[in-house]
Length: 185
Image (cartoon, rainbow, N blue to C red; front, side):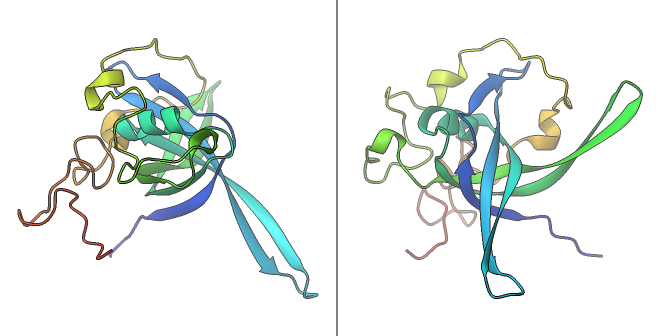
C-alpha cells in the first residue's frame, strides 16, 4: 500500500524561537505556528479557527529561524509528520509534531527588508555562512518531553549543504542551476 506523509503550513510564530544544540552539536529549534482557518458556518457567518502546530527544525534551518524570526513572524513550512512517544511516571505519552524539511521566510525582522536574492539560507547579518554559528556549542537544555534522535528527525538528503532547500544543492541530473529548484519562476 502506498503512503504519503507531507505537511504544508503557512502561519505565524507564537513565541520567539529558542535555538539549542543536541549532544552531537547539531542545532535544533522547536517552534509553534498559529495557523488560521476561515470558513462559513451553518448560519452563513464567518467562523475563524486557529490551530497551533508544533514544528521541529534542524541544522541551518533552525539557525536561520532563530536569527531572523521573532514572535508573530510569518513562515511557510513544508515537512512531514512524526509521532513522538515517551514514558513518564509509568505512563506512555504521545505527541504528533511536524518535522520541517523546508522553510521560507515570508516577512522581515524589525520592519527592514531582506537583500535581493538572500533567502533563508543566505548569510546572516553578521556575514557568517554555514560555519559561523554551527561551530559554537551551547549546553543542552533539560526538558521533560521526548528525547530526539537525529537519525529520525534529520533533514532529508535532497537538501543543500545548509539544510535549506535550494541553498547549496545542485540538480539531480547534474545540469541546471546551483539552486536545484525546478520552479519556472
